[in-house]
Length: 217
Image (tube, rainbow, N blue to C red; front, side):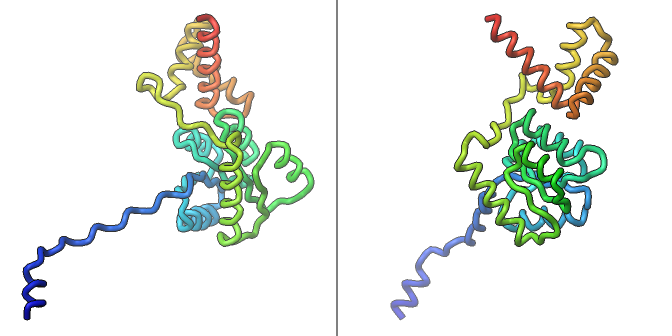
């Protein structure tokens, strides 16, 4: 009876707090124009503990990479519009985001281009997610071991303006005495010549202007 009384007199504990969600292993951008493959790979990587962003075309992939700065990109090679090679070149040159390829093609020309671009890995389809996850984990381990491979952090917005395109258009208007329409057309033309998005070209232009400003201080 004493034990029962003692137990009854103890303060009631409240409901248990839900466990905190696990910290993602890393953020990865998955790009494939086959939506079934895209959904399967994205779901499998999310289940493996990664924060996954996905895109089914190269233009969206570049915009998402610029906005979210993933630590790794997993790219299909042959897609409508921009190819995986085009996306990889932009990720490397404009944002320094490391990448790996997932493709059904393994001919000599494809392998040579994969090596030239500097991919961390090249996985040949068909593969299931159970085979892809170890490759992704190995790529993240290499990025962690080699800091030079890691993408730089997302830059702080310039005075609250995170979109570089209007700023770049303004620079071109002032520098070349262009109308807004003409300046935007020039920005698009320059981006097209380099095979990158207008946003990526705007970042390059603003970076050059800022570097000139620093050199004149």
